[in-house]
Image 1 (cartoon, helix red, strand yellow):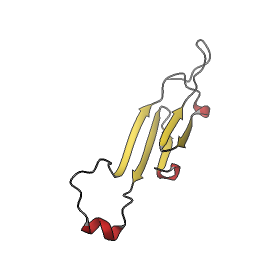
Image 2 (cartoon, one colour):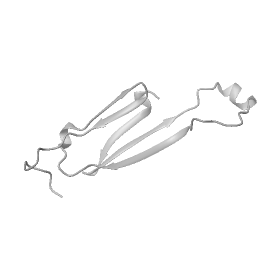
Image 3 (spheres, helix red, strand yellow):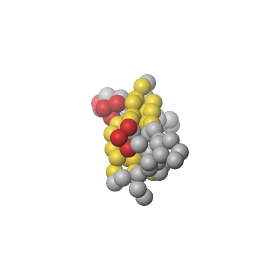
Image 4 (cartoon, helix red, strand yellow):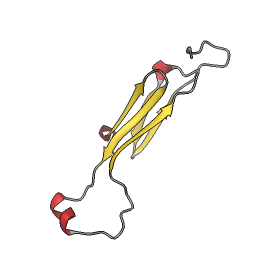
Length: 86
């Protein structure tokens, strides 16, 4: 997948949503005539949500994609420092 195929958004104040769509790379004229007994890669839309932990520095949440791997990071305030309200 490419970075353009994935969307990372912060919903509400504490929910990180990762969504996208993986499309088949087979040409459309070939996919109708060729049948595969097993497909190991899933295609279609996806949506995953993650709870953002308490104490996260919301303005520094970042996401980067490299070689099809998505890395999401969220630095946290040091213990005893100011945290976000519940």
